[in-house]
Length: 115
Length: 117
Image (cartoon, rainbow over all chains, first blue to last red; front, side, top):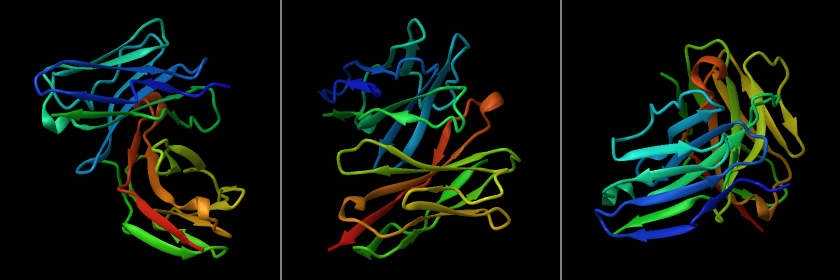
């Protein structure tokens, strides 16, 4: 079946602009995670959604970052007033809560470059 | 706080030989899960193998096996009969408890494996 998809695959933006990154999880996966991968910080958790529960936003680095998940499916990560340190690959993952290992399946990522 | 340590930034292995990628972890939780993911140059993270903290046997999945030593808090990945396609970055990750912490993954810094023909 279809895997996790993310769009755009690449995004170049000017410092100070807002960007939106989109994630389509695997159908039937109720848990959705956003991570960020950068050279300096490695792979970091950003935010987690599970069904209709309140999201776990504990990993968001600043209030410029926000995310929503509509209808328990598609998620959008928004970064306002982008800064150069926001340049990274943003990875989305989804999982089934009833899966034996709760393994997370990742999308191909969005490479964000802030100039 | 949970922490994953991978001390080998880069590793080389000859094709068809076995290789071990090291991973140690630190946690105060009794229930946790350990994962290995492969990230080829294309960038996508591929799930390889899982070990639960209560599993008494080491996990195996094809050419991948996990050498789990709970007392030493290590979860090393063993790849047997290396292939050229195994060249990639490998990440060890710990999953936080699902039911009260959502199950997010804490990743190590990764090991870049290069398989020589």
